[in-house]
Image: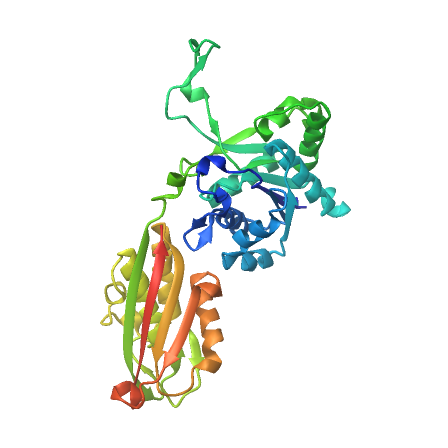
Length: 401
């Protein structure tokens, strides 16, 4: 029996320290926003049943716009049928989290509540959280009922007195700086929040609330999992600068057309009188994409990866070649911003096949179709393409790191 997963993303603060007039969670971050990146990191990592986002009073529309600015969000929500809820926050983070927990409970069935649901609470201004942190936190809750990522402080820590004198020298190796997400069994955490609300007690974070009521948590201590120094909380505009490297790649390929060969475009066989003549299956579109990605990442080109004189690549499936290249590129830390492709072909008409080709490319790259676009042009019966003797493809790509 697997425990239902609930995500709470806190974004109800005012962001006054940003000094931009825009809530930090709604600020642009690449082709997304800070809030959307934070949310989508979780939706990519695990199958969440419910995601609750806390927002300032009357600001639900702005939060929704920030979330769905990223075309990936809706696709990720649909992947596991995750229910997205926006709920008005309170005057403090603690109050906002409690409201979100109540909202999550209302939207879980009795059966789900009986299966010891797990809740992860994350700052909406932490867009750089990794899949590893998320999965480690979930596993920590499964094993220990409560878990949170932490990192050893870089600077030596001291405890000081009211008059600004050092009162105690702390051992840095026994200290940790807590990050989010903080994970817990949902129902015991709710009881802790309810108790704190009744007693009008305020705590710095949810790990402190959890530890303050051992009679409600079975005396379970919060397990620390490995955090990441890059998992910072956006506080000032400079925190968003120089966090990502962006590179552009350009690829092109041309193949003769010959009878008795398949016409392969983007991994899709398109009915035609002629197909590409080549050492592999001749898919010019996938070859152009492969070269563009290799160029942007600086890892080489398709000829150096798969030499045409090497017999092992005879009639090779170009989709498999692209999968290999993309795997190597991802290992270097690159993610795909988008692909924009052009096919030059005189016949047959490409438009009826366009969406199938886009979906095929997205599947090979394990990305969303909204990040891929393909269009086709004829050459007005000029040159080898226009005379239906050849097919050519171009691709530009954007990689982020």
